[in-house]
Image (cartoon, rainbow, N blue to C red):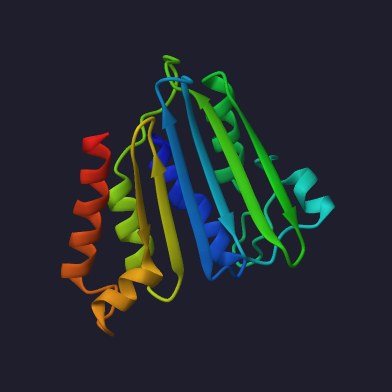
Length: 180
């Protein structure tokens, strides 16, 4: 995957496949500490110890609907972390959901760019308007938060996946990253 936003999209889709109806995406980007830390937390089905042990193996998948039984999302994210002087951890338990934390050395030449987070959020919300997504972005001196539950209240019943709403979300998220 070319950028971190695509990794986030993939992990969030995994969360949805695991039955999550709330997904929190936190991005901490700090020049001061020279780190970028992504944390994706869901309230899905979680993973047992045996699955958790295998989840970074690219030839392992819990998906049974396709003929090929491999999953590259988590292994590729782990590799991207390691290539940029960081690391990844996964905390999960059956019935408790999953939290994936991916850390990167911000200044490392091999750290992938963040990418188009506006498009990622637009894709997630447009494809899954029933899911509650929370995006929090923290920089050294400012922060941004998008919460689809709050957005639903502001829209007073209008669907989240209306093209005008999705454009607004994309532009708002991307503006938050420009200002950082």
